[in-house]
Image (cartoon, rainbow, N blue to C red; front, side, top):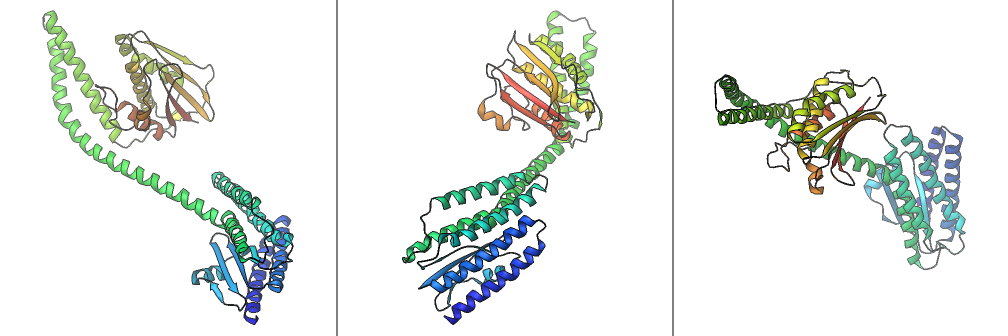
Length: 428
């Protein structure tokens, strides 16, 4: 009994000191009041459990930011489970929280068991909210903790009362409550941080892999561009010279095909270099309405050849002050319009519109084609991914790269009736 008394006295002393330090450090009266209630209820419950204990006790210490520390002791004061690492945590922790105590005592009232739970859960909850909402971008973390806390309280609501029974099996009830309270108040913060960190690491790894792949493509593209563009220049010059000759109708038709394919191959090399090279856009004020109109003018020959109508609608008032690289943005818009025109069937329409959006300006391009297959959506903006027999898979990749370089977003979806929709959002 003496050893057990020393154990309880040591616990009370440690937690009293910690409570005093933390009480003094609280900035608001609410925090101080909660810590005072916590300390008083902890002491009362501990003494009550000590006096009425018959066989054994279970104490659960939830230490914020460090995990759950469990101390199991019998009547002779022997520690049944006190791991060395947990001892270090208990000694070094900035705050100790008694979540619950379960003993084989008959007369302990329920409010004594409930007080440390209420105070212990409420205090770190207030602290978590105060800290999380004071940091930018921390609201998802706060919502995650609140969700876990709600699950813990919901589980607590369904537990059988009272806590204190003769049968030691009912100690499991208090143990579950202790674990739930510990999860809600201490493990959730590092768990969410670890989860977010793991997600960020995974995202960073994906970006590194993509960067390495683009670097390899860039090296290959430089060689390909040099080896292809030189003979392309010769072919193009020869084609121009032959166009002045007196050729038959068939000869002129073949010459037109040669010129068209030469231009297509030159554009392919250009697109490959755009995707592969690092993009460093200029930051000058741009007018998206004018750029969309210009892109539509450049796309009219392709639309006419494909027998597709091209319509442009620009809102009367567009948010001013939008900055970007006009050449890069025009490149993205022409590629997006080309993609829509090539997807649209003959006699259909491609619609491009510009309007204000939340926090910026939105460009929307709709077509009346077959839409986007669900399995193609995840890879739609990857270099060389294409669902068309003659497609290079670089047009939408260029659009994506331009938007990322400008801090904007690109989103693809299927229209409810027919066709696909691409939305570019430029942030102001």
